[in-house]
Length: 205
Image 1: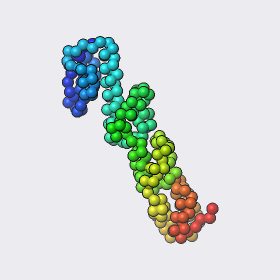
Image 2: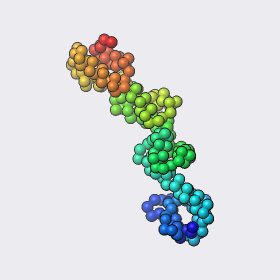
Image 3: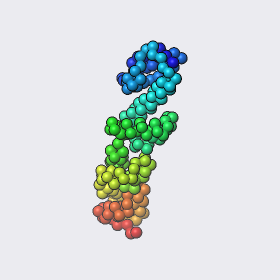
Image 4: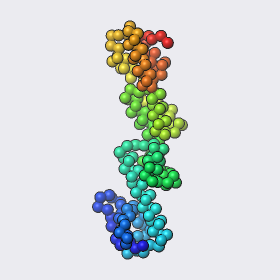
């Protein structure tokens, strides 16, 4: 297999295009160009061609992963799942994720903190945050540290009760409805009851 042409991409910085004699095009990173000592006119053995194609696939997967992370942060497990959907083997996914962690693009601890801050700011409680950690594949050993970055639930509960009750402190049905809504948002009953007391209302167990 002969490389008929080797040229830098006009659209993506750091990407090179290797046009092979069969008309196929390999999209490569600068690292692959240097590692395989590529140049126009170079003849590749069958083994070299196979290794180059694997390297091109890995480079393309890494590029897609970086593009995804720049748009939407992910946990390592989420990214591994996505790489699998893109055709990466388990070993390929692990290697790509390892490299992205080394470069700082993939960080489960930082991602967990971001999730905690985001959902607590939207008025959700600890149980909701834990559900999100689980759903997103964030390792359990990172949960407690991330929860420490969430907002104080008292402020969110007080705001919610003031909005929902507003002069109906003695309405048992309104109190029950507001309490149930807070529970569905992931707040603990102890925090909800404390919020009711601060508001001047108490809902019996």
